[in-house]
Image 1: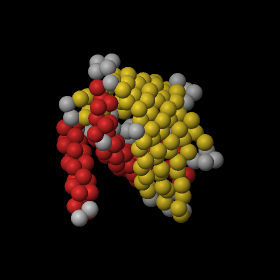
Image 2: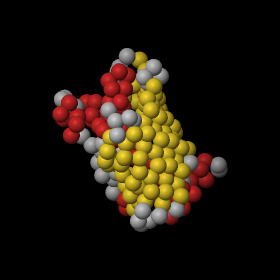
Image 3: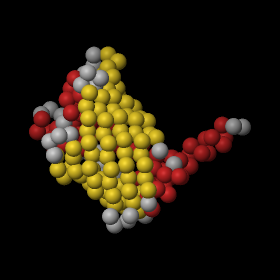
Image 4: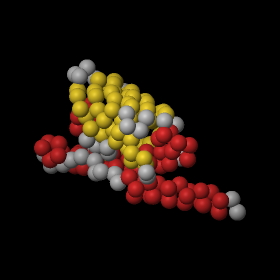
Length: 188
């Protein structure tokens, strides 16, 4: 499934780019993510825990981060396996920063997510798409907080809030249902 998101940060592009280059700090803004090892060559081992209603998947895996300073873009290719539940996942994420003016930076995220196993059934309902949107919102909130921190030490302590599986599932289901209802009533 393809996911496209965008958000704006009220900071110059250079400071936002510096944060995106700091993968350990950036990973703290991804809900459910834990960076385990930095191999020093753009390759990282980690764990991502995803809760979708009754299913919790803990993907152990690795990711490779490639940056292009001239284009202010980065690419993340990751894969992981949930050994307990039998699900597998791959992700290909492209992040691009643009500068509409001197004080704002637009963050563009294009991701291709491929799931297999029990968790893949949620991809067919559109629920994974909605959950992904909510996770990006939390990511954006954390990025803003890190950039607004008064000191580097304060920024280092900021991390994404835990996302509660049941409440996220219910909120996402409600949002999907609401869009469906709006689609029906807008046809009349």
